[in-house]
Length: 436
Ligand SMILES: Nc1nc2c(ncn2[C@@H]2O[C@H](COP(=O)(O)OP(=O)(O)O)[C@@H](O)[C@H]2O)c(=O)[nH]1
Ligand SMILES: [Mg+2]
Image (cartoon, rainbow, N blue to C red; front, side, top):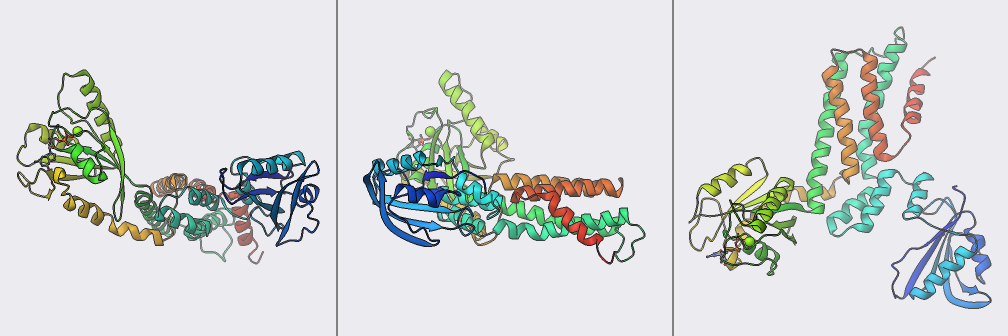
């Protein structure tokens, strides 16, 4: 238990049928008794009653009582269902504050759930992800996360790693100990390689799924007048960017989001890249190059009837990027590859290509995958440590190897937010007790 009793309005603060004001902490049942005519505060019941302020009825409410540890935070919790007006809801919150509650910080209920050991850190991440989810993939992966997907994913690797560390430790500290096979580089190397392979796959899946969930940062590039803005408009199905036959019309970046069947694109239309003396256009071209460097996908637009040196340069500029080359103005002339006519909204070949390229990744929604940047970054740290280990295996002593392995293990614990030392020590202790 963390001491004080906290409260907050848990529903959106606008007019609605009902609002929920929540409390968590030792005092929460007592506080309800102080401010209402409810005297029975039994666990797992919903009680009808009235809240009072200076002897006057403020609202007619339904109050749910959750007795810790069987509650969201593992503490005693109360949820007051009141009428949904903003005024009444705020008034009830104020009455709670005047009667011994403290206003909760953002996320504090979930933080208590974590600190009291009901959920791990990755599950807390997922609760936040679910609240913020904007599409079915984000929601699906968040729900899996709340139900322990990351722990399921990490447990086998953590078990292997822990086993490896403790076996090496025993080899170092008890060379005479014969029940356990002595650890040598020839035993460690293949195990390490397997772990590295598993982790690489995990990171790769997480990154591919992140694109499915959050959309792909896509930049439309091409020389002036090839039809970039027309393509943006066709994809967005509305006239967002200005289209003219004057080269250099688009000077600012124009953005929009489009949801295809399998993938969402966070689209940016750019100023056509070319040599220019116009001051404003030049700034636009700089911005285009910047957007290009950050892009996860480039759609390079060209016209088959008008290919020249500028197109060659753009092909070169984008050669190390993931890109799709499209020939626009196919009504005039077709090119070798994907043909579209943006002005006529004939962009099916491009859409099919995009949906097809990402169709396999969609099924990742039904697998356990790392959920967010924090987890992916920590997983990359783990990978780094293990790669170092593998590299140094023949050159350094076993205790230095255990140092790297322990660091790798530490990062995995950090993903789940668990105390790594205790966990490791427990495990090693078990080994030491074998027959001793
Ligand atoms: N014939 C033809 N003209 C097009 C097509 N797409 C765009 N245009 C025209 O090409 C000119 C330049 O288009 P715009 O989208 O502004 O090109 P941007 O400079 O690359 O953004 C405009 O006059 C468009 O109407 C197309 O598919 N076919
Ligand atoms: Mg344009």
